[in-house]
Amino acid sequence: MNIAQAEPFEQLQEKIQKLIGMYEQERSANEQLSRERSDLQEQVKMEKERLKEIEEKYNKLKISKALLASSEDVHDAKLKVNRMVREIDKCIALLNR
Image (cartoon, rainbow, N blue to C red; front, side, top):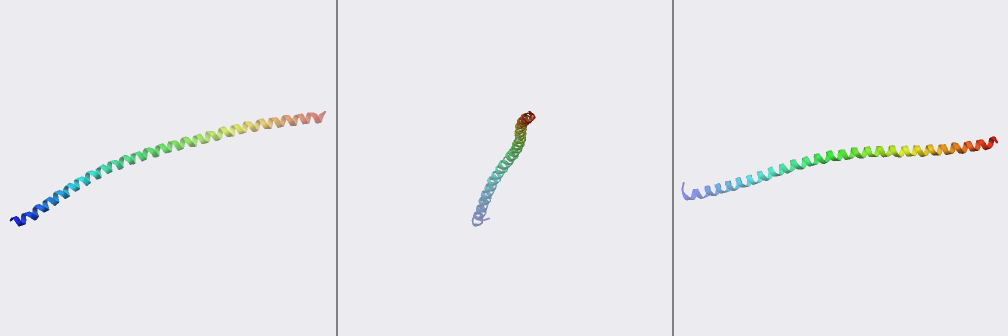
C-alpha cells in the first residue's frame, strides 16, 4: 500500500473507532434508561397496590360510617316514636276520663 491509499484507510479506521465509541456510549445510556424504566415500573406497581389498599380502607370506612349514621337515625326514630306513643297514651287517658 502506498501513502495515498493508507491515508483514506486510516481515516476510515478512525471513523469506525469513533462510531464504535458512540455505539458503546449509546448502549450504556440505553441500559441505564432500561434500568430506570424498570425501577419506575416497579414504583408504579407499588403505588397502584397502595392506592388499591387505600381505596379498600376508604370503602370500608364509608360503609361503617353509613352503618353508624343509620343506627343513630334508627335510635332517634325509636325515641321519637316512643315520645309520640306516650303522647297518644296521654291523650287516650284524657279522653277516657
